[in-house]
Amino acid sequence: MATRKNRVYLSETFLSDKPLRVGVLNNPLSGANRKGLKTVREVLAAYPQISEIDVQTPADVATALTSFAHRGINLVAINGGDGTIQAALTALYHKSPFERLPLLAILRAGTTSMTARDVGLKGSRANGLRRLLKWACDSEGEAVLVQRPVLRVQTAPAGEPVFGMFFGTASIYQGILFCNSRLNKPGFRGEWAPGLTIALFLLAVAARGDAYVAPMPITVALDDNPPEEKNFFLLMVSALERLFLGLRPYWGKENEPLHFTAVDSNPQYLLRALPALIRGRTNRYGTAKNGYVSHNVERVRLNLNSGFTLDGELFEAEAHRGPIVIQNGGVASFVRL
Image (cartoon, rainbow, N blue to C red; front, top):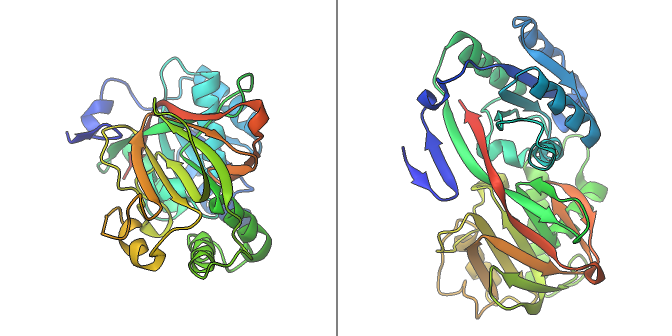
């Protein structure tokens, strides 16, 4: 067993203490599912013992998971996009319908499917689900259990927290707005849409233009360090090891579970620093002095007056309501095969 604080690989023998009972959440409105659920239904038809519930809203997801808990489900397959996964994580970790958290299996059913590409089942929805059910129900194949921390995001002291895998603000939030309004069209989906959006933003910053990028003033406090205010071009907190297009823009050395990466509003040597930094490597240009920071942390506190995204879902923030607190909210176990 190979272990890191924010990633643990376990063999399938970990699962042998209890028979697996599978439940499937289908979101027919998720990107890939909009073409229909025929192939998924055909796979499920061969396993009539499998519980299946269609969901569309976070309330639907919470209700379905409560039903699964009552039925003794201990492996939940999520056939939905990043937003559906975020709703499921919020229900699991905030509402706590299960006595023991279920295993999760993620199908690539979203527009971007960033979480699925890091911890999900390989291949199409139908092929991934077929392999999962053969393994869980027929003991065919070998699976790996991948563990990741889960972000707990508290937007106001009295508000209810939300849980997810990727938090982004500044140009990331602006990029999603741009992508949704200009690029999110049939024929331009998957990883390439956000990838091209970020590329356009990077070029705009490199050219010192502000047509697309508006630096955001944010006060940041990492763990127990004092807060510091800066104008940021990019700021993210991630529990994922891999982002879209295989990017891994983390180079912190601390032994903490969450990745924090930020670029200030006037980064130096951007085009020289970027190729190494997006792969998690440092070079002589990608330094804090030049505007590039990455740490592994347990908790981040942010004060900002703008929007942010959690797994593609958009939220608003107001500094007068108090800081946004992002911290380790627990560990999720994902089945991969």
